[in-house]
Length: 96
Image (tube, rainbow, N blue to C red):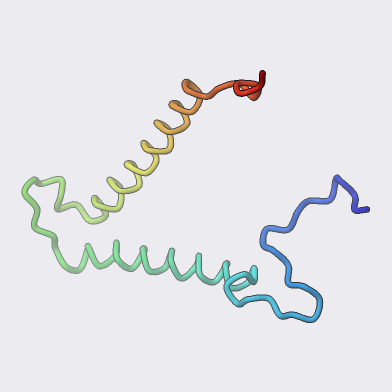
C-alpha cells in the first residue's frame, strides 16, 4: 500500500513498458507555457510598433485589450466563486 502523505503527480504516469505521451511530459508542458507567454508578450509589444485606432482614446493604449481580457477573466472567476458559495448545498442534501 502507498503512503497517504505522498503527493500525487501532476500528470498521469505511463504504464510500465509504455512511453508517456509528449503532451503529458512536464518539460513539454513547461515549454508550452513559456511559448504562450512569449507569444502574448510579442502581441502586446506589437501594439507599440503598430498603432491601434479605436473609438475612444483609452482603446489606443498598447495592451489595453489584454488588460480588459484579463480583468474580465478575473471578474468571471470572482463571480463564479461567490455564486458557488451562495448556492451550494450541504453534502447530505440528497440523503434520506
